[in-house]
Image (cartoon, rainbow, N blue to C red; front, side, top):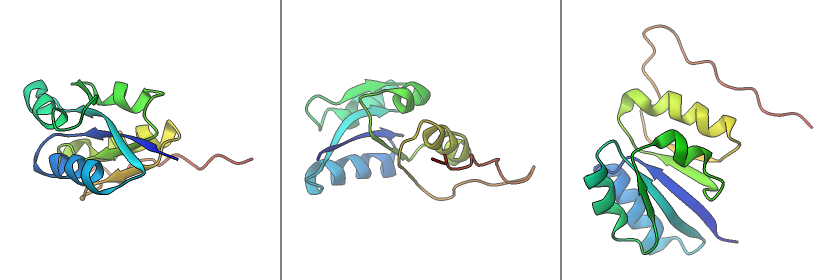
Length: 114
């Protein structure tokens, strides 16, 4: 089974995740790359045939064509986007730090119960 991965963030770490997933993980397919800088997002996605490009991380997370999400965007977005991915029912890998908590830790969603 191939896992369709969307990568949020096209800086050094995001680009490295795309390169490694595309080149070294046989059961992963990078299908989308998003970054606030569309030029940077396009430059990273161009290395992966067919990868879609956008500037909207929430749309990537909500995309039914994305099975799992890698969060490698600016640190200040990690907690919010990770929670969004979990709420969307998608596995997520988030770069560190998960969050800085001046107002307390984020409210994590509870796992769904059968």
